Structure formats: C-alpha cells, structure tokens
Length: 485
Image (tube, rainbow, N blue to C red; front, side, top):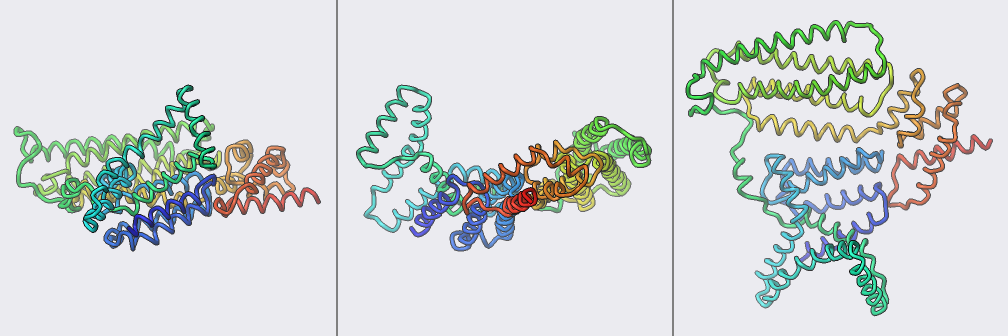
C-alpha cells in the first residue's frame, strides 16, 4: 500500500517537473529522487552491482543535461533510463539483450504488473475484499479506451462535436476545466515510475536459459561443425589458407595506405577528403564486421582446443592487427580532414567509432587468446558503447567545435552561427575582438541568436534551468553592455 501511494506521489512530482517545461534541472531532480528511493523500494535489485552502475550512469547523464543541455545528453539520459528499467526486477539480468526486452516489457506492461501485484497483496491480507478482482477486470479497459476515444474524436468531426459538448456540459456541471494533456502527462509519469518501482519478476525462462552462460569457452565433446565429411584437421588447414590469403590481401591495402595516407603530402579538396573519410569509414565498418565474422567462424568451438594450433592463432592475431591498422588509417584521413577544414559533429563521431572499433578488435583478440565465448564479446562491447555514450554526453561539442574552428584559417561562419546552437559564449568572446573575424561575427544573425536566447531564457522557470544557457545568457547581457558603450 505504501509503495502504491509513493508511485502516485512521484507521478505527481513528475507532472510538476515536466509539464510545460524543457529539460534541465527537472530531470536531475527526477533521476536523483527515483535513485534515492530504489534501495527501499527494490533492495534485492539494488544489491546487484550492475544496477548500481546503471543508476549512477543515469544520474550522471541527467547532470550532463543540467550542465550542457545538449541534444546528445538528452538522448543519453532517456536511453540510460530506458535500459535501467530492465534491470530493476527480481530476477538478475545477465545479458543486455534480455535487459532491453525487459525494459520494453516494463515500459508497456510494468504498470499493469504492479497493479496486479498490489491486488494480490490486498487479496492475501483482506479476505473481505472479493470485489478487487472485478475492479482489476475493469481497470484495463478504463485505461485503454479513453486514449482511443480521444483519437477518434479528433479524426471524426461528428464525434468531436459531441465530445466538445460533453466536456462543456461536464465543465458546467462540475464548474471545472478538464485539460486532457495534463492528465496524460501524469499518466505517462505514473506508468514510467510504476515500471521503475513496481514489482516485476521478469521472464523466468529467458533468464534461466542464460544462467549457465560464461565468458570462458568450454570444449565441446560432441562434434557440431563442420560437416561430417570434413575432419577437424581439414578445418584447421582451411583456416590456415583463409587467414594467410586474407593477411596478404589486407597487407597490400595497408601498404598502399602507408604511402597514400601516412606519408603522402598531397593536398586534397574538401569534397575529396569528405569522400576519403566517409567512404573509408563505411568500408571499414563492413570490413571489420567481416573480419570478426571470419574469426568467430573459425574460433567458435573445438578449433580453439586443436593441438598445435599456435600458427593459426598467430595468423588470426596478425589479421586483427592489420584490421586495427586499417582503422588507424581512417583515423589519419579524418585527422587530415579536421586539420584542413575544421571540426564537425560527423568527424567527432568518426573518432568515437574508431575507438570502439579498436576496442572491439582487442576484445576479439582476447576471445581468441582465452578462448572466450561470443557472450563475452557481446557483453564487453555493449559496456564499451554505453561508456562511450556517457563520455560523449559529458562534452559540449558545439562549444568545442566553435573554439577550435575559430582558431583556424577562414572558418565557416555560416556553420558556426546558423547550424550550431550551444556555442554563443565563444562566438561572443571572439566578436568582442578587433580582427577581421570579429567583424564577420558582428552580424544581424548573431544579434538575432542572442535576442532569441534572451527571450527563451526569460520565459523559462526554475525547472528548465541549466548552466549552459544561463552562462550564454550572462555572456549576451555583457556583450550588449559593450555594444551600448
């Protein structure tokens, strides 16, 4: 009963924080509130290390929303909140894929599971409440039918007219105005919080299935692959030939890259470098995926335990190393692009992607050396992606891009002023100088951006407060004073 009341109170708290507000201080307060209650509401789940890490990451992502208020930080905040949902249940989640499935189940059905669990508790404690089962039967239609009714009333003119008259009559009868949008914001918060705090046991068969999964690869005593006509020794010889040919092929590619990328002093245009980087990046994705599939194909089972397979392992290590060099070559191309034409979000994304690729190749090396299972690869690399997203959300990239590009020759002013949003502070600092670049920045576009920021900021309340916009607002006020003087 206490938990049900707490969920309703937190839904009201959600409504207060979110209704007609932009993301800022409100999401930090909300995530900290939920996290502070989890140890009491779900002590069994909170005792697990992965749940503590996810909650800490979720709160940290909400802080980045409060501090930077970037679009990326907001996406990461909702993503971590969604993933954390799946792990807050009675059965431990050992595989992130099942964690996402549990998150979907919690988001769309957690509220109903919580209601059903609450009803079962009432039924056990109060035998004089046989009507609860009937209430539960009616509750689901009552929750589902109204949204469809509102949709149909908007789509059908006759039904919409009837709905308006009905609401007018109800408002006259009870002397109150009904705001359905507020109700649905509250309902959304209630469903979200019920998924966080409600009782959920999880899909037991899924979690029992992976209960015995482990990182070390165990030898299979029963032959499963290759086909009956091919012995393990023949597979070993086939693998040797395959890795030898692949190493020769990628060795030629890397040798060409050494002369055309690493040692070349040839100047390229922006379009050439763009195709140079983007085309190489997508080819790299395809090549790395193929490389990992090839390694997984040969080192998936008993070939890991084949006697005297050291030569095959060395060829596999060389193959992975050459793929890592291929990734570094794309990084050098990206570096040339940045050096000549400045930073951009896409070029920064390439850097993060290459870092994840190199980490993935390293984990593949550990898998062959171990030997380890595919489960190890999936878990480890998923963790790396989560850490990379959290790190990426910790930086105000608009501000960093602007500072870097303003120090380059002939920066793209249109891109900095019109295409980036969270960078007014370095633009104003440069505009106050006495250079040709400062003159270019002192345009009506910059004034319009400052005035728009001023209007937006002054129309916000404490719930939407964030450090980044506050700092830009203060900088704009100071800049206006210098103009007036």
